[in-house]
Image (tube, rainbow, N blue to C red; front, side, top):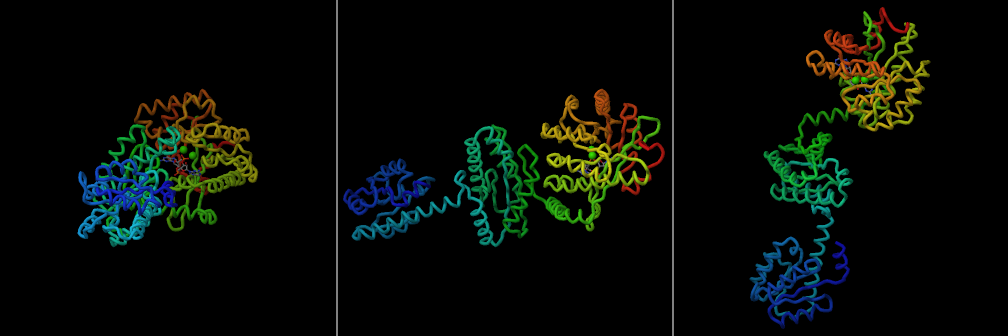
Length: 565
Ligand code: C2E
Ligand code: CA
Ligand code: CA
């Protein structure tokens, strides 16, 4: 591109004159010599050698048609079929008008009739042909991504729209391809290697589009879009494409995810087709092998519902659509179970969607940070509830609240929690904090420090979902925790699977040794409960005792044998 711009500013442009007549060559050379560097060849074969050598610098070829060895037609054909030589414009030199038509058909830019009696006309036509060719290249380069030669995003959508208009919106499929963890590929192997992969992918996509028709672009650094006429075989084609690219991606264990929208007359425009393909692709975000998925309407309605929940969240907080339910935890170490504490679990009573369960919205809110507001709301409600029950029933029932990993990175966390308890006249030990095990393994140091500080402030820390994450048992020794909540998945199989039984036994023994009490979650049957009791699990939570309940129903559980009266 730089060379081309320099050339455009009038610096070193070179013209090759190909003619077997010495006199003709000299005449043309004399006309052009003061504007251009002129090279000469006396037949097609010699010309071809020069063109190959000077392919980057030649601005124009002037070509006689009738020559020995290789004639002008043959040379023209060779040039037009070569990806590099193709860009050099050719002006045909001829005396027959029939030949003029033929040479234009073969891709000549223009022709000049022999004999050359008007030098100014010759110079003007040469100048014009060069300019036109150079402008074409500049346009080509601005609409293309330099690394892969595919369209860039703007031109891709522009041409895609034009294509749709010309074809009266015929069905088109949209494909999005993303390289998994490309940043890491770059960091591990260097940018040059990353570029090399992108180039190879670009080539494969070029070839794919050549076969299927349509357009492709590099949308951003590691994401490609393909827009192609609808085909019922799209799945097979993509499977074939994946096996092609896997040949070079596989070497370094690089994987891609592909989302595709198959259009069967949706009438959508290009942008909406790609929205859907992107959505499908996003579904594979956490998949680390090469995979592809087709968009379907379910995915779309789920996405719309998620968007709706996010949009409605602020208003829901204001209007108190969120309600906190409480699920009891019972101490089962004695003869009769004793109500020991409760877990606060939020529910959303949406005015139009009805009851929405936290399983649906918590991850959604965690992904965009909204969870912080909701958690604070729940913590306040829970603290107020502890106080209200104390005022009415005369004893403190500790309540545990869920602390999501987003909260842990908030430097204000300790201060916020302290304010909440003191606003309700409580000491921190009444509010238990459930922190999911997987949070500990994310960024151990920071999390351990934060949790240790909370514990120093007097809060009781319960490690939630234990067994789902990757912390090893010996890691437990160094972690600042007061209780361990054994994940439901262990309990589910405890009666039927001897391995699950054994595992729970070992965990409880070890926790005993470390003096960390275990709470079993999700206990549903008397059988599970009896086995856990036998093994020595001191605290149990689950449907066996009660589902999470609104406070007014929870109060009915206050009976004999309460702790802390
Ligand atoms: P979790 O913290 O593991 O909570 C336990 C979940 O298991 C609750 O689901 C509870 O209703 C359910 N459960 C309890 N006993 C049983 C049982 O015997 N059998 C079965 N099948 N399930 C049982 P829920 O209320 O739908 O909450 C789901 C998750 O949402 C919670 O899992 C927690 O991670 C999250 N969550 C709930 N409320 C909040 C909150 O206020 N803040 C945050 N950050 N997360 C919350
Ligand atoms: Ca929990
Ligand atoms: Ca849990």
